Image 1 (cartoon, helix red, strand yellow):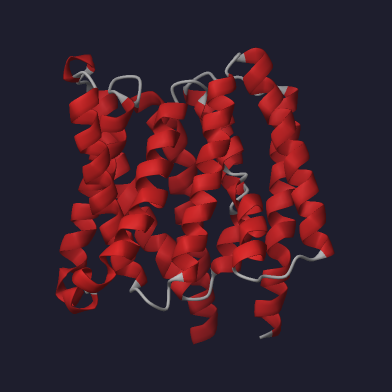
Image 2 (cartoon, rainbow, N blue to C red):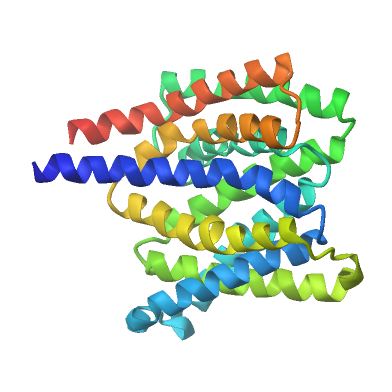
Length: 297
């Protein structure tokens, strides 16, 4: 009974994480209309990091900042400064739903990088998944290039996916050296502070339009989008639920596309529809082998 309860809790947390991720894209797309992108990204990450810092402070003996500051700095550069910075700027150029589909090519890129740098197996299913993923992303990219005429938007979305995959590989590679929870806290605080500082120096504060849409977007981003999502993600990872997160990630861009269509009037084209399906199948296949191994174990 205990095992069943644990499994139910795990799926409940996973569903909550997917909903948070899926809803966040249209919320951020709407919010970045009222605040310059670096300031918008920096405020969300920094406040989210401070919230987690207060929660983690009782376990500060695990921080070891003087010994591990290099790991925290590199993780912050990959997972927050580059990932969040590129993502937020990219949302200016493309619809949130379309942008999220391109970014969620990340699990496919992660399969390649994990094969190269972590020694994970490259199976036939993974290869088929990679091919389908490339086909799906090609379809979605056509919309970005032909309908929205944004080479920059497509390039920034794919760069976001690559940086995200690289950041995950880096954290995985060093998870035995540094406490994973403190890695999350430090990358948010350091990365958020850098983005916020860059925004204050390079962006126009006068361009901020304070309204309910912006404030609610910042509140959502700092709490649910950053702090709560990070806690859920790493809790699932630490409990050995990586395969579930990977296999169900394809739901996020689907959810994002439909929410964006309903609330932001973003179009769902034929290319976008079939692209989502191909990317979804691709993500599932790339993560399937790992799932099978965990079931056997």
